[in-house]
Image (tube, rainbow, N blue to C red; front, side, top):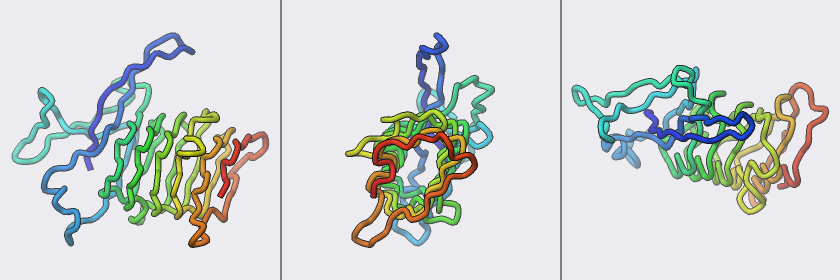
Length: 231
């Protein structure tokens, strides 16, 4: 699956400099692929975001995608080579996207936008998709980021710098409606677990919810926000 992108320049008060980010805006889906939905040929796919600090994207000319011998022309963007500060996943980038069977979010990603994967009902249906890993580099996970993604069963949580309010709120927590989650692993890089992070991720009717919560590595000194694991 080929990703589409944009760029964003942000002023950083701490360093008094401007930083440029590569912003993932969604998937590039040809008409032939779109027609597969609901047919015997349809198969959710695994999506890599930022593997080895690189992203494969379409080649554009005057805002139009380019083809060669009827095949989409693509290029690989190297984050370090282009001197991007990191990758952001835009708000609603993959909302209701049935083609995603799993997503591998790599350490070049710094932000997951509001409703980025909301409604991806096939997320977690491939062998590689049974868990979601949020890397240590991520500083913000937007409200409803994984809304109603019921397929995956485990979340591995690494973020270092997230603070209260950076993972949704009581009305719209990041993992709202993710009723398939049965296990959460908190790794030693995570000093703070934001308020409402897994708020009401359980399915009370089916009596399903998080039944395994483990801390990997050093667990002392961690702060857990209000209602972070309230079911």
